[in-house]
Length: 67
Image (cartoon, rainbow, N blue to C red):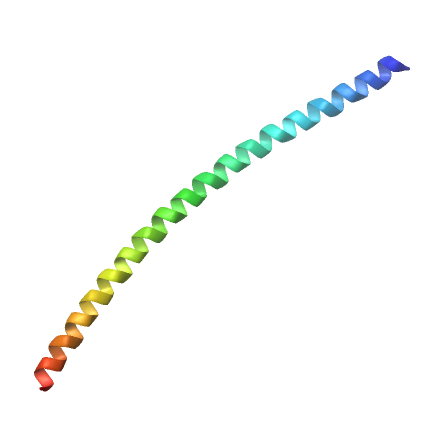
């Protein structure tokens, strides 16, 4: 009887270890995705700032033309 319980325990431990490994891999993938999104966000913010500067400049030129 105790050998059967030990076998069941071993199976459960093995399953738990496999689950932990899969979760670690999934976590690594999610961290990589997050890093990529952070980089993309940074680039988009730079583009937005550039466009804002260009528009501000154009509005300034138009204001000077009207005056």
